[in-house]
Image (cartoon, rainbow over all chains, first blue to last red; front, side, top):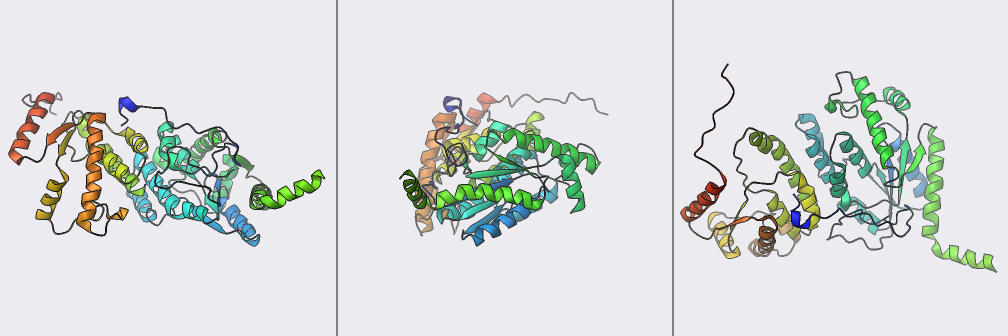
Length: 267
Length: 162
């Protein structure tokens, strides 16, 4: 309900500078900040692993975490709907059949805000590497598919911190169907049954996940995703993630050593 | 932020179930508090003003919005005369400005009133002096509403009875 007098364009992401994320925003708020939580030179790094349901995110995160910890990094994990405040409410609301697309979006946003304030920001402040199993892009994709205004969504999530790296595990629907059926089977929400594509869960899953994947791909440039081909074996994917993370973290960790090496070379 | 978003969720739920259907049916909806409450309260809690306005951009703009204004002292006196304990969030105790609930209430709600004063001009709220007697206030309210709504006209249903 913006008043006409101060209807102004939404905060456009500043395109200057060059962070690890390529957009100069990494580690800062995407849009309108949380005024009482200024982010000033926090040493921690935020790495988001995105991808649709059943693409193998949690496996990759677990492996990445072990590897990082062995190398001496402090690691904190955070995941969608895992907030202490909101998890029970979201489960209850999903079961009650009274959710509409707007309340769905807002419950997720509340969960995210809780984790941002209570988990992510404190961890970044303390110098941890935060591995986020899904990030706001999942919310943007799911709501976008359900017809929620995309600009409104981006304004809503303006208080999110732009990750230093976003890995997007990309997969095709056919591969995805095989994996999901081989593990836990198709569930109501992951099949988008609320969109009422029909009674057939298989057809609904395929149609819904197809739309979701298109929605994710459309965000790849906007949010500087590093797209990872997730159809490959687990260890191949993990190798790619590690290579990228190492390339990003190591120079950031030891800037002094690097400049010293540079001097030696110049002589 | 979570305080703000939980209220927005509740609001969205009521908007879609309790407000929009009667409006579609041509009824008058009386809302006890509206998005303006969130604008005033969330801003006082330190949330970005423009962000809250954008958050609530899905709300229906009311045809008429009344703001019952009282000085903070009147507000405190009325509540204390009626209730033993001030509510935690109503007093802004979460902000930690004072450990004394009454003192905290006075500070927090004082700032909320300042925010409301800004909203009056921004959104054209109709200010009702709520320091007066109930009867006086109701008379003013009825006058204001009468200018906006034809109450005398009864609309009969167009549908034929089955």
